[in-house]
Image 1 (cartoon, helix red, strand yellow):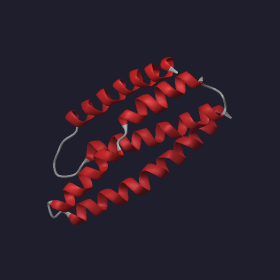
Image 2: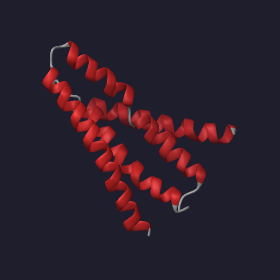
Image 3: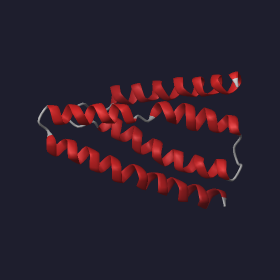
Image 4: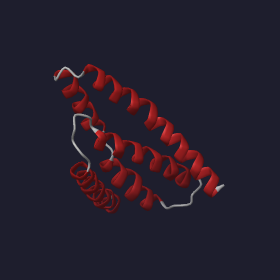
Length: 123
């Protein structure tokens, strides 16, 4: 159990650092592009990883490292939530609703695309 916790922690450190770097790299002009971007990328990659785990193509420890650790820290529902509330609080209702719509439609769509891509690659 301790080994698995350490694996997730190492992956989490990598994912959090990547998310921070993207947040610093992507422009901040009123729309949370960085958070949307990491959530879209994470959804796509988690779709691929899910098929890889289901087909026993990667080990449990590698799934813990990549899916739970890296992607768990890389993607962020809490930041999405706070950014959405902030947009509403600033009176940017149209932007907030656009952000919600894009996130809620595109993230599951990219997870599906990742899943199908994984099936095409591995099956």
